[in-house]
Length: 86
Image 1 (cartoon, rainbow, N blue to C red):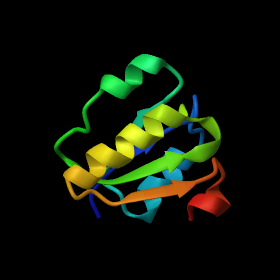
Image 2: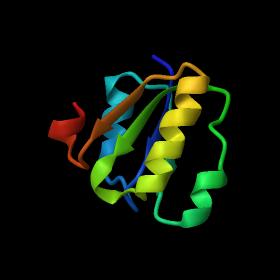
Image 3: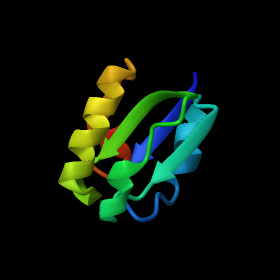
Image 4: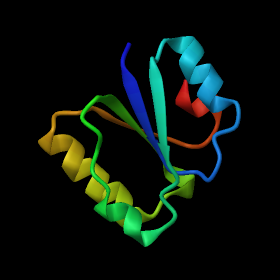
């Protein structure tokens, strides 16, 4: 299915395993708490971005949205619960 970049939350817990079982090949995670995360670039192999809205710096979510749009990467938003993500 491709690679997924998860932005937000300090720890993903079992969400990583569930995303892998759904078909994602690779899961990368950025916590999104620190202000310096805004300067990070989106890796070239990312197919989708998932922003966990309850644990993310709002400025980071805006910057991620802009960078993803310029690279034509779909962005999805959900709360940090499997029922919201699925």
